[in-house]
View 1: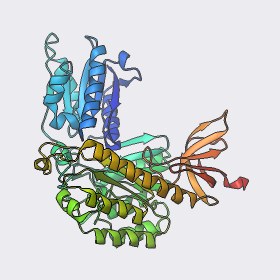
View 2 (view 1 turned 90 degrees about the horizontal axis):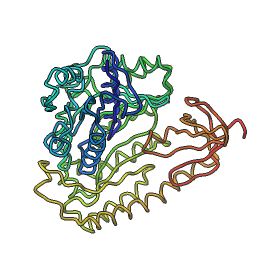
View 3 (view 1 turned 120 degrees about the vertical axis):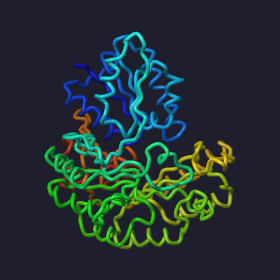
View 4 (view 1 turned 90 degrees about the vertical axis):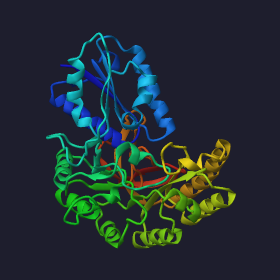
Length: 447
């Protein structure tokens, strides 16, 4: 039996896939190991979403390939293998096999084929065809990834949106929903593990269920998860598509305290012309009205979004529209990314005409604006109390670190607390200080 090490790159959805691959290997008698140099099998779960992600994937594979010994297998898995297999072949010929993000459940089959070949010819084996995640669940393997007492639960894969700049549909195919039964089984497993937070993820979580019968959608799923996991205090949803948020969703979030008032709704731009070219919802007035309605109905709602700058056709006028929109809407959290040219996407014929230095200047301008907004938003919490999920601590400094409902793991801020608490504790904290991204406080019982 082999010792294996998995390197997971990219987003939380990839992390779930990596955990699933590891679970299958363990189920077949293999054992995980922390040191890749001592592993018989090293798997890199790659990200191929944008050029920098592909560059990182190739660099990680190359570093591992240089250190690889004759008895060690190096496997490339994930997004990049589906659409950029030739790039991996040409840059890292030492790779022994590849398996795509839709075929992770066949990892043992891949290893068997590698084991049975002529060991003197380390030719690569690639399983290129797509297998749908919804119709090929592997028995006993959960689609979850835990970090402390929080866990990601993957409910679908792929995407059927046609955003002009995005290569995800090319890489992963259309959205395929997992079955209700499989997801609820995973949710129950997380409750049994005493998880304090379940985070629902997909490329477009709000599109869940479009391919299922009986009119079962993401709102139905959230209600069912809440019903079967009464002992999980927090349920968070990431990545909602503009226009998918309706009154039923608003009322569910408003009336159920366990369904956190946190919404990550990537808008990508605010200028109607740019949005139309992006093949995104271009009625910015409707988007504005929906966001205002959300805030009116859920006053403590934490709104997060992302924007792309430097998209072809974005001049100073279009950028000013975006900047003014950010100033007006005052998002709690905000991410900004430069446009990356992606071949074979609908936007490819437009090229990449906005200079990189202009993109950087616009990113800096947006983030400076948002930092002030974020600081003002955080200052509003000084003197108020928040429930904090503890994620780390320092006994010598007598400090604990955690997150509030306003903060998703890895992408948002932290709360630093005077006092030592165990990981997984949920502590009521009075906020005493605020910075643009982080908060500081003391246990409320000391007030």
